[in-house]
Amino acid sequence: MKLTAEMTEIQTAPQVELGNPWQTVLFNDEVHSFDEVILQIQKAAGYSLERAVEITLRVHNNGKAIVKIGSKLECEKVAAVLGQIQLTTLVEKT
Image (cartoon, rainbow, N blue to C red):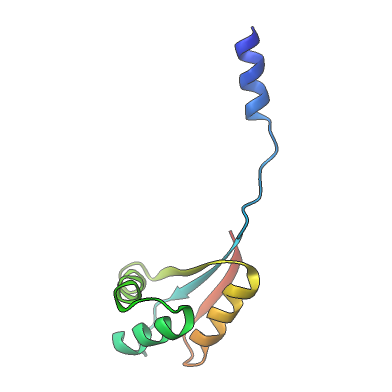
């Protein structure tokens, strides 16, 4: 019985909010070249060439990809830089 009570307690514990509950999502388009997107991701998020290429391929293959997870302000800044060349983004709470 004691084990069951402990399990119930764990299952009903309140959800803990993540420290960085926001994300910037980038959507695929047919307007920009791979190189343009890669460079803009590097500019927006400060990522290496390899990481920017990986994200760009994910966007191309899946229609969208997460570019940044962080505070709302950080994610909005990344979205703003991506938007400078009219890339479509969404900043949302995770």
